[in-house]
Length: 134
Image 1 (tube, rainbow, N blue to C red):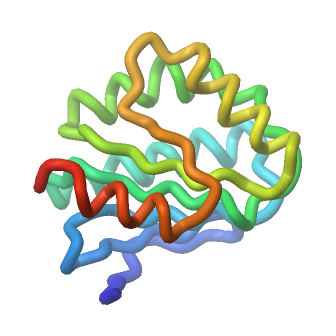
Image 2 (cartoon, rainbow, N blue to C red):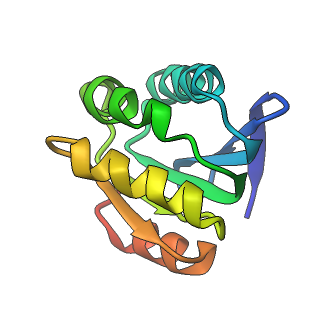
């Protein structure tokens, strides 16, 4: 894979997977509500700038619960991402059960979400490659 780093912080790295045409978001460590919101806004900015329709959202390095941001992600961020062109969102779950609960809560609250949960990066990558081209 050829990744171009677009953004980095203590809790999130965002890359452009150039050959595959998607954003790769690698979330790291404990996520506060403010960290989630800030990181999501960065993802939105890059999705718009690159006119992409797919995201590989990797939570394998996330620890702990971030359910406090679930409602915002579900009802504010996902709709704006979809307005910006998002069609396919492969969401790789954290091994942390508390983080898994946060992701599941987000999808339960999302009226219409393009997200599909996966347990590993290989499955998520395979799914993104099979869905419609950007």
